[in-house]
Length: 325
Image 1 (cartoon, rainbow, N blue to C red):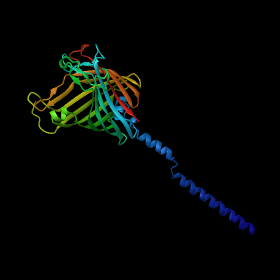
Image 2 (tube, helix red, strand yellow):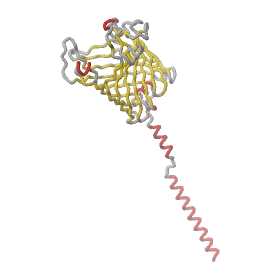
Image 3 (cartoon, helix red, strand yellow):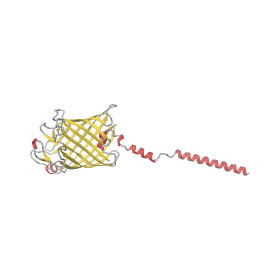
Image 4 (cartoon, rainbow, N blue to C red):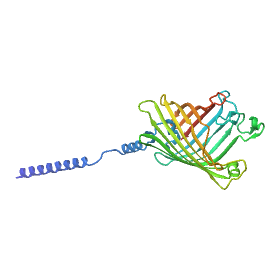
């Protein structure tokens, strides 16, 4: 009798153990075993804008992937091929006799990453006239024949701005859409022309050419000045709005270097006193794009007008996108 009771207890215990194992296996089959770190890595990978925007220049235009960062876009418009370090820059988009000064200009500011592809930037414009001419902290005398001896204010910090840009991929093409408001603070714009600011929108589209190393795209821009009041000065006119279509092409030598050319053939401006859009002198730039890092892109180039290609009217230039932190 005792033996039968003992065997019954052993059998019952075995059945309970088997049932418990079956229940555990059933729960395991319906329970995820993914680690939190795996989920985080997958989410980070999904939110990486670099998977959609692979072009070096476009990445640098969007800004750093950090939530807060320093963002700047600077350009140096130098002298001609004949005198690249001269303080006088021939105006290749106007008459060969019209001269302008070389300048380092651009925007510097702070960038806030709103989303994977969205960036909100705040900053101001900066200009240093003839930056290679002596002490940049001091004013200098204008070397141009038409303004010989006049004082030139060397450094200007003006025109604060706010910009929102968004990078994304659509129809298997890389795209950046942006809108910018610039607030005028220079006396020439605020007092003489009676302007408040400028609103601009732009759209950049870039496509791959099959399996080749060529890429091609177009940048469309539209901007309009916002007036504070009327403007009535005899013999002068006030800018109203402009539109431009800029095709460009790139050939990648490797991940860090590429040949780049921009065709500024379709740029138009409208002045309030004139009824029609006026086409600006066509120009073209050709140079080498250098991806120093993911966030620093430099483009040394030459700029010329296709209608009159000459060494004394072809200018040297460098543009750069610098993102830190």
